[in-house]
Length: 183
Ligand SMILES: CC(C)(COP(=O)(O)OP(=O)(O)OC[C@H]1O[C@@H](n2cnc3c(N)ncnc32)[C@H](O)[C@@H]1OP(=O)(O)O)[C@@H](O)C(=O)NCCC(=O)NCCS
Image (cartoon, rainbow, N blue to C red):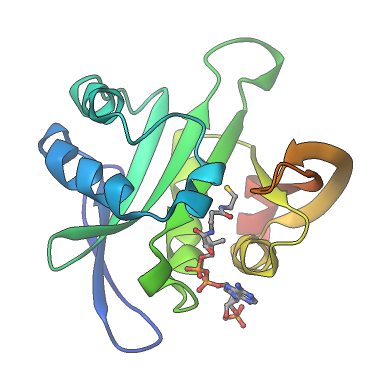
């Protein structure tokens, strides 16, 4: 998966290509983030409406630090999942996972497909555990991560802000990568 593209099929039969992001994806990624509704940007840590930020990611790709896996339908990016690694120290065996799926491609099994690939990739990278933070009230996110072998580990109350600015709870989900492959 580190170097190759994979084909998949969504629940409605749509064919999707999963592949690592390359520098030539800059324009398509800018358009992807522009197309997302404001409420989905809550889940993104940077101002991705600022093209220069997105372009700098494409120009400075370093798969050892952040591995971005894209889903494309007819050359259009429809989802982005990133695996973030810590180079040194007590978290060096961990990867953090973030995902966003375009609204028109949600509930079709795409996140599940991509997260399964990320777990495979984590194993290839020699990572032991994957970490994800999801809003406690997001049934879709919890189900998608569970489908890929993550389980619920902790809830931190009132940690995040929802779109109305109210405090909300966050759920920490972990995938034990090696145990996942021992099953
Ligand atoms: C969370 C998210 C990634 C899920 O993507 P998705 O492609 O719709 O996920 P899947 O289709 O693989 O769904 C997994 C399961 O959850 C269900 N599901 C998806 N969205 C749902 C929703 N809003 N409500 C209830 N169930 C939902 C699916 O039907 C599927 O069920 P199954 O296990 O029976 O097949 C997507 O909604 C999204 O991008 N949300 C905003 C960003 C976010 O929350 N990221 C997570 C934190 S990093």
